[in-house]
Image (cartoon, rainbow, N blue to C red; front, side, top):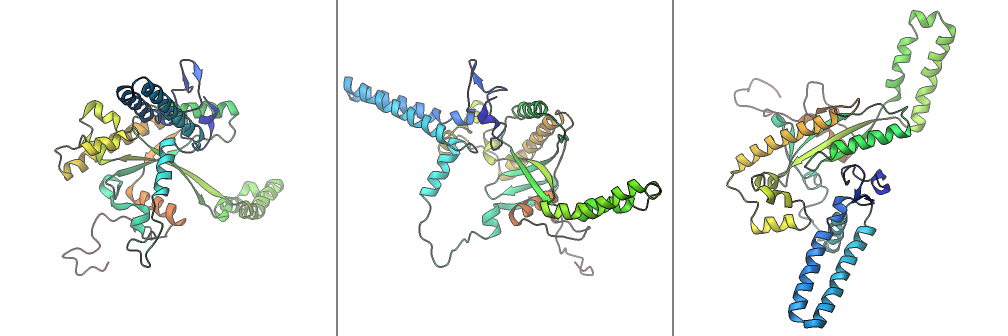
Length: 352
């Protein structure tokens, strides 16, 4: 595999097979990186075609020069694009930055600190364990329990990374891998040592008693000094409305992920279907369920790895922690996401 794909900021999914090579030549770029050449090639061919028809011999020369310049610019963009994002996404962010509003009114009608503006969350769907975004995407998550690699060698890490890359490359839909760290109270870690202090075997062994007391007194201070956190890994799986609308379009559905082509399909109406809103949502749920099964099968196929779906209540917790950096503590019997109304008709005698 290439050095570029070994960058920890790169997605493991962006690979040419297992070795990132074409015709035996090892490369440092992924398929998503090279997708930028598709519109560049179309543009170059269009320039050559028009110049040959309108400009004669000199027109062909000028057209070939311009076409070569287009391809060189595309190659330069691929080369200088940051390692943590694709060239297409990088250009989109530059364009968004260049076209942003340069002035603001005294009173913003849609302040950016509103939760719905920042999180893009429209609602939670408890019965399907999903969250619906404001753009219509349904998103679910899978929690991953990775293998214990604390004592693994460099070769074992390479093998695990290759296995993960091969597993994710079997997926034909986009995913996002999210890693989070939650702070842990050092007292929780040393609690077991306090419990062991009164055990008969510890009381009968002075050396073991000294070890337990040392761990009980020194570990909390060390953990507070360096910080202690628990790592959690989740895979987010989305299904858009366009995925459902293009599902029955055959080869057309394979073009939606190409730069600019997906927007063109939406413009010409290729993604439209005769499904109602309720039918589209039902198709989204079924597609999302199938994708979750595929992700779980891929993860469970890895050595010593396990996973499980994330409930809507847990998903709400993850979103809260991501945006606020903390978790609101509720009673153990109180869910964050309710499946029934807070106040219902006929429950006048009940206090909520």
